[in-house]
Image (cartoon, rainbow, N blue to C red; front, top):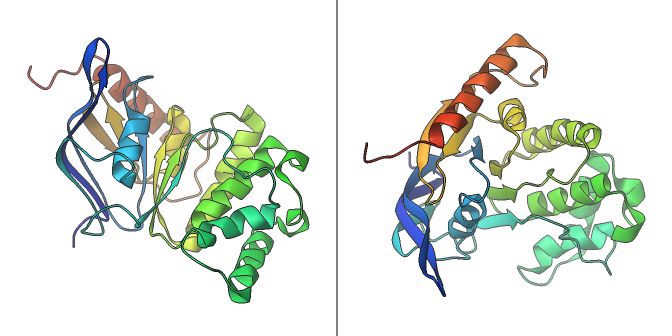
Length: 253
């Protein structure tokens, strides 16, 4: 069976006044259907560019990107960094926007959006505007909107990165419950190695720019995972070692 997401020897870079800046170089990875994969790497290595290439927003300059065996366009739900809610729309309206992008919506779509809010404890905020919600609540709504899109592959770019430690820990548990209930394939970019270990089936470790996959770390533990447990801490140490090693990675050596 083919992977749901497959990048094969992808190259991508930007033209700058100083010349060509390579960002992804000979970049290959594969993510299976139903898998949660996380991507970690040094700051500025090209993680966001990887997501944009995987979503079809940026076409590769060499190599191939396949989602469900074809072009990624129209097959991916992508949640970028930062505030992404429409400020003039309610929480319910923001979630509905995931389907409105595909065409007119009907009362059944609205009922499904209400049910999604209710299932994950947010029904009482359905008519709230973004400015009336906390940062953690806004991220919950943005994540539900991404899950509500009729896409099997979700690309999440640091969705919890701006939250305080306590809120982040709560949302990690909540996000895992959403994923387990809605059966999507997730690729998460994060700078938090422990978060990757707690949530993922597999962690891809990238080199500095131009990014390549230096190593993948399997996380063969049942969920939920105990943050302070010895197995989690051992895998966290392994992933941190892989990340440190990747900083000196040279494929030609």
